[in-house]
Image (cartoon, rainbow, N blue to C red; front, side):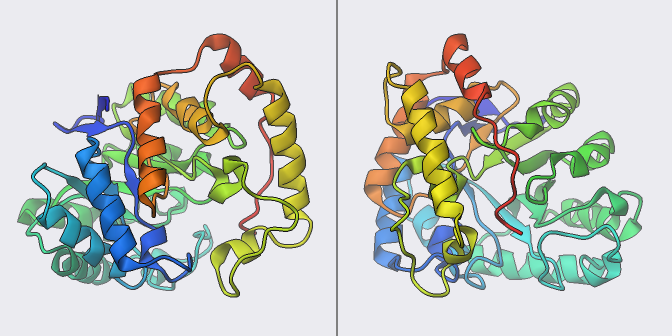
Length: 322
C-alpha cells in the first residue's frame, strides 16, 4: 500500500481508503455486519488506514461498525465522517437557506452523535455531507467548524460536493476554511480535473475521490438483466434503459483496454490514482475479496499516458442521480 499526504494535514493516508456507505445497510441491501467486520479488518491488515463514513449511513450503523473494527485494530486509522443535511435533501440547492440545512447547533449536535457512535473523543475529518457555494459567506457553518476544532472534537474540516457538480466547491476551496473535498471522480465523470483539482493542488487541499466505480457500473458486472432488491439505491440509479446505456459504454471501454493488464475495476481505481491531486480513492468494499482486489491497485501504480489518453475519450456527461 502506498500513502499520500492529506492536504496541509500531517496525515499520510492510504491511496485506497475504505468507503463505508455500503455497510450502513439502508440503501445498499444484502450485506451482513459480520461480513462488513471481516472486510474492514482485512483492509486494515493490507495497509488501509483511512475510512470514510457518515452519520446518515444507516442512521449511525456504519459509524458503529467502523468503531468496532478500529477498536480491534493494531494500526492507527484516520476516520472521516459527515454531518447530514438537516432537511435530508441531497444534493443541496443554492436557493435553500443554510438555516434549513446546516444551522450551527445542528452541526454541533450531529458531530456529538458521531463521536458517540465512533467511540472517540476527536473526529479526524468532519465533513458537511452536501454543499453549495451559495453558503460560502454564511457564519453558521464557519462558526461551527471553528468551534469544533477549537474544542478538540474535530481535527480537520471538509465538504462533500454535490453529485457531478465539482465547480460548486470552488469558492470553498479558496476560503481557507476547509482541508479536504470529497468529489465524484471516475472514468465516466472526469470533470473535477478542469477546475477543482488544480485549485485544490494550489491551496494544498486533500481530494477524496468517491464513486470510482460508478456505483457498480465500472465493475463490468452490470448487465441488462441485472436486478436489485426492491428499495435498494441502485434500483433507482440504474432504472429505465440506464443499464443498457452502461453496458454499451462498458463494452466500448473494454474493447479499448484489451491490451491493458488488470480487471476493469482495477484499471478504474488506477485511473483515479494516476492524478496527483487525488489523495485517496474510497470504493465501497463490503466483502473481503473486494478489499483484496482494490488494495492491489495501489501496488500496481499509475497508468501510463497512453492508457490515460484512451480513457479520456470515455468521459460521459450524464447524471443518474436525478
